[in-house]
Image (tube, rainbow, N blue to C red; front, side, top):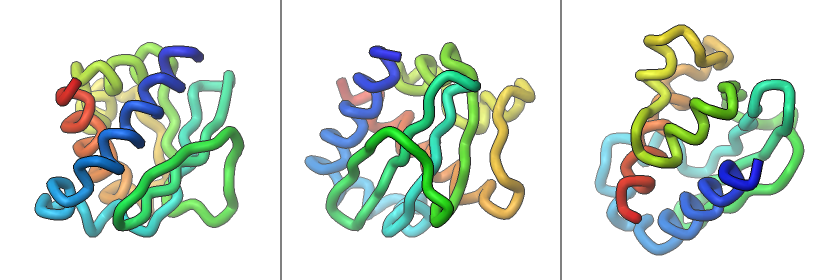
Length: 119
């Protein structure tokens, strides 16, 4: 889990610094002002909150999240290393996301991959 928390920390720090860059992408409106439940298999859960200029995470889940995204630990590591995004994990049939939030989830995945590549 240490690598997942490091990946989330990097994402939040990069987003907090580069939110103006993200704001100029087509994905910004999908992710801003939203909370995301991130499930690492059956091991651990995180709540990611993305606001217009900041992002933060904490342990736990919220009933108010815009999307619940579940992947195994290896796939989360691949996303945070910039090797994959949610669409590629979905294509491999290893992504679980509530159907009414697929576009929101895929937007977050693209931004996560983008910011992960900026290490």
